[in-house]
Length: 424
Image (cartoon, rainbow, N blue to C red; front, side, top):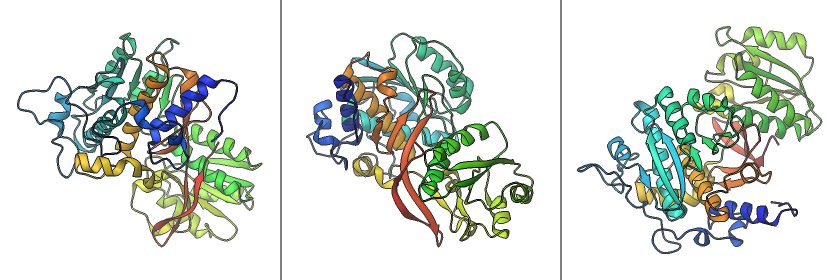
């Protein structure tokens, strides 16, 4: 990675953050500049698997201790709700998670809690005081907790919420002196000072389109579910294509109820011989559109089919065959996966990784720049950061951009085509 020469202090901060996020096993050599042990003393001996962070304050008598995570899943809801403060550092950070929400929402919230605990043990225990509050999965309550954290005057950053409506509300608020928000909501577009952490469909679509454009494709069509999310996807794909001199010939919204035939028919009427078709799926299934495309011979020798990470929220269908998809590389979690599994007795997933990265990022900022280092210059630096979810950076509009592997669906599996591609 290249770093700007005009600001040595920012260069130092960026290097520190990269090292803090990626750890000793960095492939890029960042850890040669600054080892995590130079940022914060990890729990236990250097190089040993990290133990869970110290027990948080507020433990209810009789509730499970932090180290008693279930053998096949995340920390129990009772334990997570009872233990709301981690670390003793001077920099105060608030974290909002749906710890007691029912179903998968609560399970994912408790996974993020465990990821935060590991990051505190690795890097943040002496740098941060991390206060974790339970949003219960309620968007209104999450919004109120977030506003309280932002206006408290003590939190230097807020990690979360994961509720989309709450994050969208925060993005509409004005005020230049508020602490940054690292929102964990899925498919959140971002806003000034309210950064979208998770990989979005717009980012995946843009990276996939850019990868095909880099091979010489020039004319693209975007099929996207009708609704508010279509505009950010269209904008990101068009910008990514422009880098390679390619163009987005047309964007066609479609309804999940029309079976896909109409939008594919409209595409054939409007665009002659496209080089590639990008299909976004939103929260629905792309199968109907893919079936209609298949009837037209797409994908084929003349036309490439590009999917998105949201396709992968469902089992890979035979109609995915031959499509290209840019998505996160699970192997990036390698530097933390073994330690996490040893400490919490289950395999980490992307929820763990996102939470780990945001707490580690906060610890890196606190170490390199102190409690007042949470500013736009650091968070929006163009070099970005490498974490357990790969290389990412934040933009001034609050969106995130990620470099990620590029795959082709072959025989029902993802086959790696390129180790890294990005729509920026």
